[in-house]
Image (cartoon, rainbow, N blue to C red; front, side, top):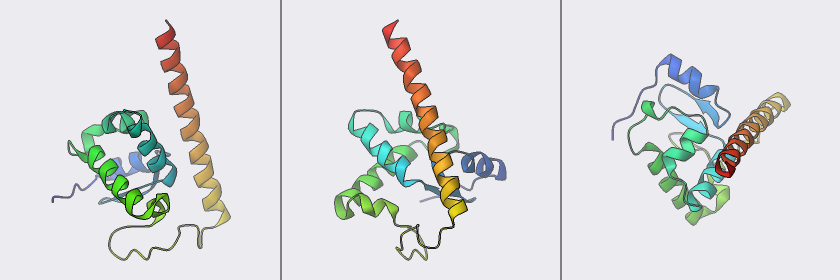
Length: 135
């Protein structure tokens, strides 16, 4: 499996998205809230690519099946470990400790501010969608 290496511009853009907890040139860690919302939306029939688009991601930087594969992986994790499994870090060196351990108040505030920003953007999008449907 080939890995995409993100440019510094892509890393910067991805890091600014409220759905991204952290990003490096080789990996993206999504927030727990984004994963849960993505699974909920997918269960309601929204396509993975549309979920990523709604969250403000540019799909051109990933391979074609990236979003679909993420949803598939997250479904397996939820089936095996429940939603709690979505909070565990994956990859090399993952300890499985909750991400809240050792997190400073500033980090918590930043995460919550990003969550509020994401939810406001999502509400604006849904309001526009409802207005468009009622026309």
